[in-house]
Length: 584
Image (cartoon, rainbow, N blue to C red; front, top):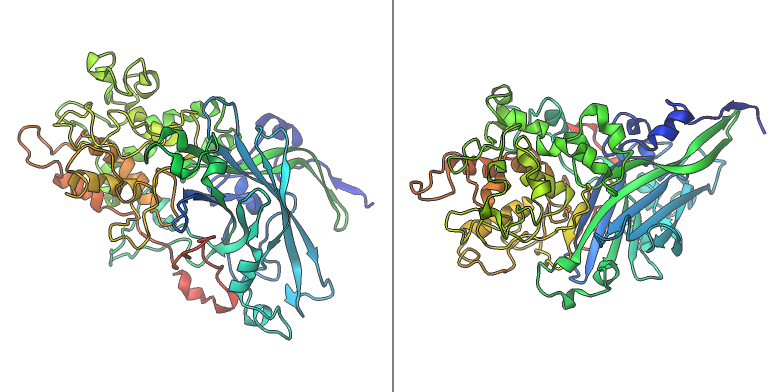
């Protein structure tokens, strides 16, 4: 063995002692300081949705490795062989941690180390396989459900892939199909490089919210992830394997059955110590520590302040660990740029988004204001989620946390099918009255994760009312469309299966979350914008509400059409066909 050069691995930055005290680091499209230096372990996005091609299954997708340039040879991006990738599922609020965990570990070999090419003469460097293990006892034991899964190679170019003489002699579509495995427990699994399905105006977002809405001809918006790839772990799982009692969709009491709610998040972990030796040898030792996690989109990117991003990733959504960050949801920084008494006038791109200051003439939801706290203890809250007998202690904690009533449950508990969280349809002007149900993904773990009610049907992607605005659009239809607002009876409304009830690949989560920060959920349940005057205004669809609903944060769809069948994400961009100008 060569002489030891370095024993302690703080991901190249920090000593082992700091690793012991901090425990884990950061995640998601380079938005936290430390994980930006460890891309192979960087979560970029998590999706969980009812499979549009199969009403009896859920698709969960966890993506890793941001900003993969398709032409990035000779050492193309690949899953890390010393990274433990995990997808975590919660289906019970009564247990302490995961109820189901899928663990993926990857191995790679050079089939022909005599060449500098990644693919030559039918052989691959690196040829990658994986093992998938499953735990149903909180991670205490794991069972192997796929032992030798295949990862397709990067989509390098026509000579490498299609050419039968010097390449693999097949189509890339065929490589993908050959890589879809069926686990011995019933899940379908695909792991490999794909087009990054997320879309966002990154440059505008981080120029202090200087978004460029789609249709802006003066300074056109740019999808910062256009023609970049990621590596995906995709699972298609029968509902009965995820439902806490093993029930199928057909056994659900209704389309908002509370027993069908799951929480989903993903992580990556590394061993604590990396040892580098003179030469090519590298050793890994010590227990695995989480270095990346992701549940709800944009949490760490646009909610958690920069000084706490690494700490956020050191926590899990369990045992109340996320409560230390709750104040950033009850008074979100982004709200300051939607408030003219703060910094709203300095960010004109967000002019359409203005938070209620005098909703129904009384309620102020700007940062530091009381919101609905003035009703604390009032008998009018009896029978609602805001009563002290229900969740008033969490949703109305004090007179300076106005968004604990709407943003906090979206991220930390899910939203129950209780007043006031029903559409204003049928409420006769009283937001605390019973209205039209449109969501129940309540799983009160008090931690950040995607929450999905698996009983809700999928909206067909070719449905005329399918929308990338997800649950916001379902609310609009439930309030304004005669097909859905004629009564308060529970019925399926298109896009009830959209974000934040899970997350579909098509959902424009950036726009939805900005609309939510501006109070659109409050308006949906009857806490209208300030230009609505009770007893005077003829329609709650006021100019301010129209402004919010008409706002978009830039790109509103992916740069390439998604697949209609599993794994739904599109094949990776090919480096050989990649024009540099397409980025701009």
